[in-house]
Image (cartoon, rainbow, N blue to C red; front, side, top):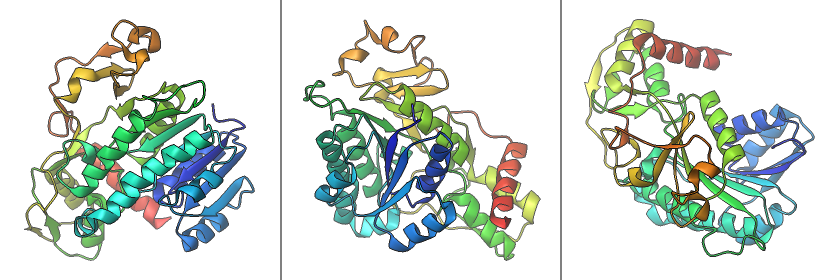
Length: 337
């Protein structure tokens, strides 16, 4: 699917954007355009990759005209640009709306203007029954993408829009493992919101596998979700102590906008959710390919999700202690490289 293609990644200088760029370059693509507003990150990334298939375009997804120009002759768009820091967004909610919602609609409009073949937006578990502004804006981004084809003539506008939803990538900025490692390496006691809090776990390589597979098989209007295990904060803490020592802990309580457990599919969404190989997908009932009478022709072997009222981090298989220690050690080794 990717060989010889021209690809654009919004937010391409972020951690996901750079990892995705590296993986796509291995697939013999023609060109990857990195679209971001961070000038210094573009300079660093250009030097790091040193690949003449990369093009670096300064721009903001709030600027529709710039996006339309940037997407000329592009085959595939990965939309990863977003404002993501929950406390900052709670303080500046309309800025998040301008980027995560209006900016995402600008991406859609630019794709349609250029007849891009496929557009994939990268979402989050925070979009499920959101408690904070970030989650609400990412839910709206999903809605915009999965309904983008509802009222358009596919002969005139062939773009296939799909959405992805998964949890925090292990080791990503602001996540629990980097925070705990930093505290314990300096022999400080760790700060814990709630020992019972649980989160889904996905490594960067697992996230990339999921993104690329979903991009390949997506027919349009789906929300793709990976099958994941989870961990509790207590489990992470115990594994950390075994690896780095115990210097005490302080319970600070759950912060505004945080949930005790995260969900990837809520109970209402289960009515239109399906199991397919190592994925789940939520279908758009307005899209003809997902009518109950034809969905098995669209996805051979697909089946309704059974025996699960919701897909939440507190009701899935937990990662073992040895598994967590391996994940933590891999993160530490990567930081030491």
